[in-house]
Image (cartoon, rainbow, N blue to C red; front, side, top):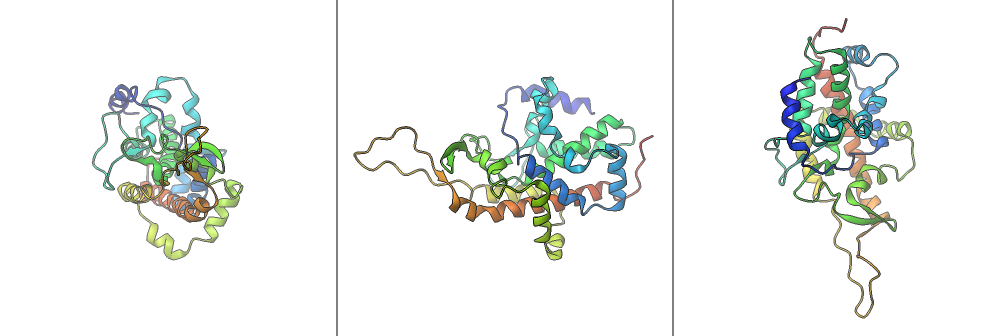
Length: 279
């Protein structure tokens, strides 16, 4: 682990609010499961060297979120800003002092390629890479100032209060109530060879720009005010239900498919040539 990277991130991260997770457990597992079908033999061998035979990519995918329950400062402060980027336009400029998902992804790529890195550091790096590629394809993890990636945008999802970020993390993904294996298999069946060719992209800045373009289309219009003479029982929240599912399910599915294909492309590129094995 590069100490300078961690120390720079830790100081500023303490000042930041903790965002909601990107995708939910289902979404991250779907991304990893799709990627697993596209791995090269060399990448697969190196991944097995790092994770061992018992841990699959889909198991690794949610580990960085699960570890945020750990009270250690690394998980509570340092790593928090590594799950998202913030930009007001669609072009990525630079990372803030506390770091962000793109900076973390680059750092962890270097760890995987470092023959002197320990097995524990490579495990941390691989699990984060699997997770962060998914994060950067969740449009609201490419947030804009200043609603915390939609966390501050309150809505109703089929009548129940929630926020827009939570809708995109889990509720939209889980609407069909499919397991991650069922959803991954469905998306694989509906991915053409031409789409794999078109989406095979290892540049995270491209993924970020795509997410930013989508992001601004996801916000619902404000809720209608009560009719004149009628009193409201509380804040009027936009109602998201069947029409929102109909409009955006295909967008969500495309981002999951793209994330899976790009994760495979990214890992295949990391291991494009012979690498020192762990002994």
